[in-house]
Image 1: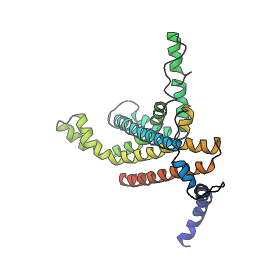
Image 2: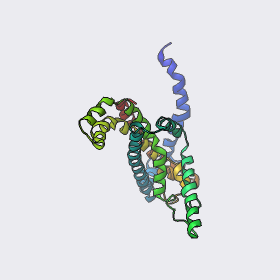
Image 3: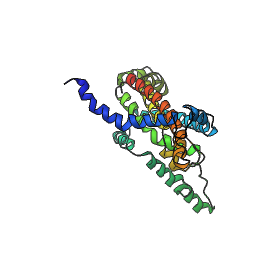
Image 4: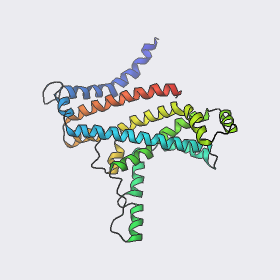
Length: 271
């Protein structure tokens, strides 16, 4: 049978489960049930301060979390790969398990530790007798940033460990034999080999941070409104479905563009 025939069933399933609902979202954004021109909803949403604020917050949080994940992930991957310590192999394997955790679980763990009634605040109030503890950052953009860095850093560590495993150890030995200090070896030998993996992991984290909903919701950061949170508010709380569909189309366009960038970088990295 022709190969095109074998491709029909998965394409049909994809069209029914994904492309058709996506087409309905785009259609609702262009031809809302309440009437109006095809781009009236877009003009109304784009002129809204709430949308501009959500877009800026989403981009800032995603870029900040990605930068934090790259820095922390590169440091931890260096330690796991090149600093011998007991249990290094077990730690490397546990990263795969960590990747399977839902994002709200990490946020819930942070709430148990740093929440207003968490362990850290409870310890401080017991020791000092204060009415309230000092840790209140989880309900702020800094708390969302911490939770995203905590959750998404393993997505950077995994490709880095794979890249480090392919690194020729003779290069490190020659550099060390010539008197190069560890910092110079990292900068001139390890980092150039890790750049494709850093690009692949960073672009993937950026895409996921732009679409993250559970972390923002579970931290209780009421003043932090991202694009996914704005979609939820417009659709569920305000029943403004045309505006929700417009924001969703914008979010999808940004995500698809960044995912295309991720695929290009990951191919170059051999991922």
